[in-house]
Image 1: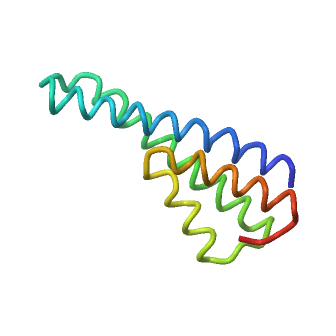
Image 2: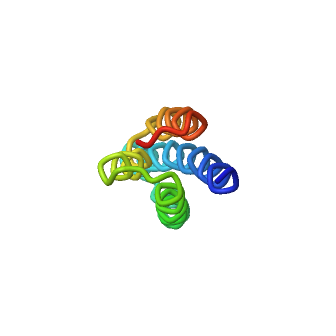
Image 3: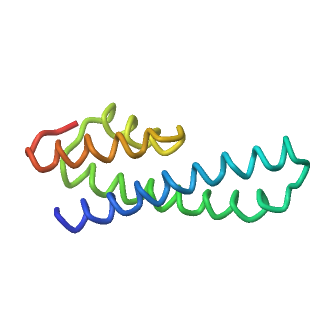
Length: 100
């Protein structure tokens, strides 16, 4: 399970940083009138979030999380900064051998 946890941790950070980049790109698009950055960051973040979803479900199945816990961790990648918090909680939970 350590491999699944490591992959999840990596993607949680990548998605968290990607989401912050997406928010910045949205500000540039709507406040600055320049949509170019959004054309690049949007699809990249979407792809990375899809990978995050797959890796989270993989870890959830191996760690035997509840559906509610799994759904909350999946949604954590949609709110800025929450994926960092969720990653910490998941690591603590998995290392303590507790289900979410």
